[in-house]
Image (cartoon, rainbow, N blue to C red; front, side):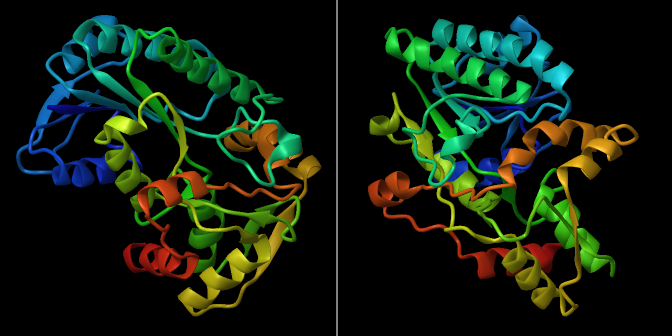
Amino acid sequence: MQVILGSGGAIGNDLAKELTNFTNKIRLASRNPKKINEKDELVKCDLTKADDVDNAVKGCKVAYLTVGLPYQLKIWQEHWPVVMKNTIAACKKHKTKLVFFDNIYMYNPAKLNPMTEETEILPVSKKGKVRAQISQMVLDEIQAGKLEALVARAADFYGPGISNSILNEVVFKNLKAGKKANWFCSVNYLHNFTFTPDAAKATALLGNTDSAYGQVWHLPTAAPIKGQQWIEKIAEGLGTKPKSQIAPAFLVWILGVFNPIMKELVEMLYQYDRDYNFDSSKFENTFKMKPTSIDEGIKQMIKTG
């Protein structure tokens, strides 16, 4: 049995499909779990409650923590450490391997080109500090020999049928609706995005590879292109003009007074005012798996969009 803690999200749904390549015993655990595969076992689980997590993990060989908490700093600060504490405790108790699906907010902003698994941990954002804290909780347990786990990190992501992606929300949906695409700070910097089906496939593979444990892995991600190129490629796929508008930092800050999402984005804008190059060569070389090309990823996003 393998369990997805926080099933139903952008990664959880695709991961449930990919895990069928390794097992026919899949448990989906969340507040309102829904079957992805016919034989999935469903367990209601509030990850902030230790007993719920313990019940979800019991009897499982591998647990995948893929939950996406609401994009609000206060919720992250209050709930993420609790969720991680509960998950680690349950995995240790039941001798379950842990795969933590992570992001790159904890990296030093001065060293984003390129980012590798060895990039310095030096977060400047409050959300980044939360991510650094919970990732270190896993790494400390690994180092102490008390937990068999791995950390799988993704860049910003995009993909078919997902809603919590900046690229999907402010570029694809706007262009599709005949509006201008939005981009932050400047369209002249490099940026790459992890394609969600690739992330799910790679996460399932890592979780079922004994030698992958005890390490941090960057999930397969195509090489970066400039923001303007992303806009042009998506517009071309949609058969529309690549109209766009740039939201500089001060405007996002002003909009944040009225829009809670913009308010949460302000501290993360450093990811758009410099080159952002997420390097996944370690994974690609180890598993001989190449990421989906940007053109193909956009094609699939448009097909299901």
